Image (cartoon, rainbow, N blue to C red; front, side, top):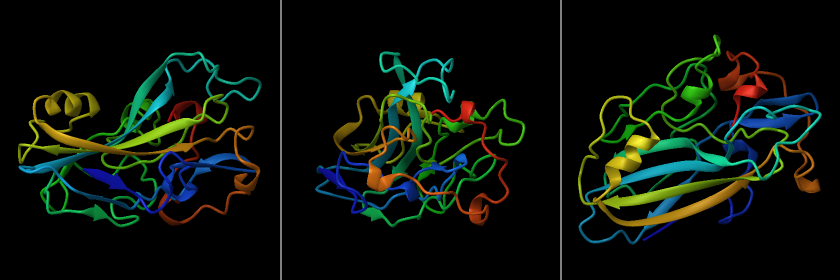
Length: 236
């Protein structure tokens, strides 16, 4: 069983267009937030459905130092998982996604869910919790929303796309489910799994010179209705 993306090499930097946030000369802002192209093959015999999870395991466990210009988030601070995408009940006949198929822009208050146009269901990503106290953006964030790590984090963040092949056609989660519930429901049903990973940073000190971000373009497109993000509420 294997999964891959033609958009970046495994373990290498994720292109900016797949992120929720980017840097410009004026600071942080929303990016294109396109869901990435993915493909997979060699599913185990007996696969009845697929689950896709994207998570960042480098999110600071405390927000005390997050996005403060006079300091960096220390590398030795304990880190926690942040779920960026939960997609369950994918039919095994599906062999991949095209660029932007599941997300095109960052939607204030979240994209709809959990139902999709097919059999699959989407769970709540962790922007739901981080925007909960933001009057302009609070809501239920279903589906894919990409990287937006703290601009002062001393660690480059890692994003892991994990595809699971299951022996059940429908994962036993209900309603507006989250990442913890998906992981718990996977127990005893996984026939195989494969991963593809990438990295992303908004720390100018850590950005490769050739990839140093330019000025942000004028607001527009899918993010035009959004209030400017409060950097303290953008963790992963």
